[in-house]
Amino acid sequence: MAGERPLVIVRLGSHAEKDYVLKLAPFIDGVIVGANLFEATPGATASLLLRTGGKARVYLDPMTYAFGAYEDPTTRRVRTDLDWIKSDQTRKEGRGKKTVREFKRSYRLLAEALGWPLSDAVSKSRAVNADVFKDPLKTATFCKRVIDYQLERISREFTDEEELKDFADQVPEPSAVFAPYFYIEPSNTGAWLDANLALARSSKGLGADVPVHAVVCADVAHLKDAAFSARLLSELPAAGIAGVWLWFSGFFEEAASLEDLVAYRRLVVGLANHVEVYAMHGGFLSLALNKYGMRGVSHGVGYGEQKDVVPVIGQSTPTVRYYLPPLARRLGVLEIERSFGALGVKTPKDFHEKVCGCAVCKGVVQGSIAQFAAFGEMHRSRASAKRSAQTPAAAKRCRFHFLLSRITERDDLHKLSLGDLVKRLDDARDTWGKQPTLSRFSEHLARWSAVLTQK
Amino acid sequence: MTGETGTRVFRREQELAGPVARFLRNRAFRLQSAEVQFFEHRMDLYGYSAREDRTIAVELKLTKWSRAVEQALLYQLCSDLVYIAMPRTVVPRVDLDVLVGHGVGLIAVGDGRCWEVLVAAPSQVVRQHYRDEYLALLMGGE
Image 1 (cartoon, each protein chain N blue to C red):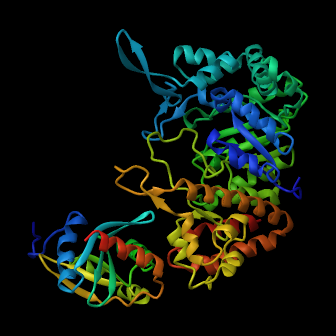
Image 2 (tube, rainbow over the protein chains, first blue to last red):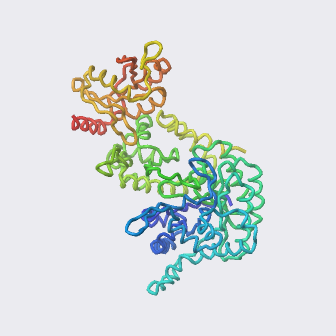
Image 3 (tube, each protein chain N blue to C red):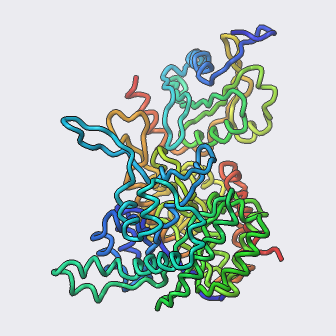
């Protein structure tokens, strides 16, 4: 499987991101949409997929894991109250109003659409238990519903409307369907791994016309668990599925230890001998592991190359930082700009040769390298704001630049030999990585080189 | 509050701001602004001396001097002179060679007064557009 060009599949996080997907659909390989987003805005999402479908592969992530147990990101305790898919909602009560904590509409609709055991979980406000999948008949019924949902949900948006029926034939079919999957939380690894494998086997057994893929949604600690990896390597291929998407919560490619990276590579290599392997929320390293059989990588448009299973609630909107291609990571404008002098980046031409020559960068940095600051442009979003925040235009520049860089990386990686790829990382470490404002952010390069070359 | 040796113990970075601001004012940096945002960062003190036509940025730190150097290097993009200011008791731990190598100055803050331990070299990487922008900000805020 190594040797095929890696696939870049962009995950649509919200409809605010649709412009990126629409404009870049001819250049990316696929679009993946969470079923919760689909249920929140079915018409808009179906239309978007209709418009991109001819140009890029389409995937509908059933998001079943959202109804399982999860680890609270703050307390690290396992929670089964499903609180993270609830929100405070205002209800009328008599003449007044009251605030209640209820399931978000999108997840409630998704649970209704996918039925047992998700609908039970919602009605009881309690997470799905791994043991329920010991019943093969019930499990098969659930798997069928989840797969049928992925195959039919998009077109149903058109067939249900008389005026739109004609479009139904043009609706793209998913390139693959996902078996239902749940987070393998570390305190109950065995039961959840059993459940996920049972769901994969059962889904494959339904005989769908499109390839069935599994998702391994686990904790980063599982990477070091040899028994866990051994079961994946033997039982996933045996399940008969065509592909597997790896998602290790807390696994950040740039910060990961060499030990974790080596374990990740071993898993990719071992699985890629039998099935297609994808990174569900991957970055440059996952893409580079194409040299070891990684088939594709999905990620968001601005950030999301790494993703925890449960997001931390209440964080402010992060700045979309500039993706520095030589270091393959996002950094602040100042940290990068401070290095320009020492690296001989003095003119726009230097910038396009040594930093980035994508269409966005050529458009922004035209007359002077001082224009690079436009990627970090700030303003006060409200008159009362105490701090300035990145302007929406700057965030948009950074996102488009990132996506174009990723497309270039995909194409370059395919052309480069493994030796050339490692040399590129080493050269970046010896130049960019030696700069005082970047050295702290370049330590991953040595680990990436090592994991790509270690026997 | 004072320590056993009569040296003031600083518990928060902001406690360094007053003595440093006075010190710089006495050195002709009369135009000053505190907590000036520079992209995602915040300069603790930014000032201007009309007499010398020089801008100055100061990073206040209680202990982590190497982190202060990282920030100081960024401020060299918008300021002619950049200093780190730290409690006098902590200053002996600072590797002065690192600061000299980067042209970053060092101010020691004691009980009510400051000492210039290391003179900052004029920034070689100052960007005129940033400098002009922040100077205008100072002038406007006068």
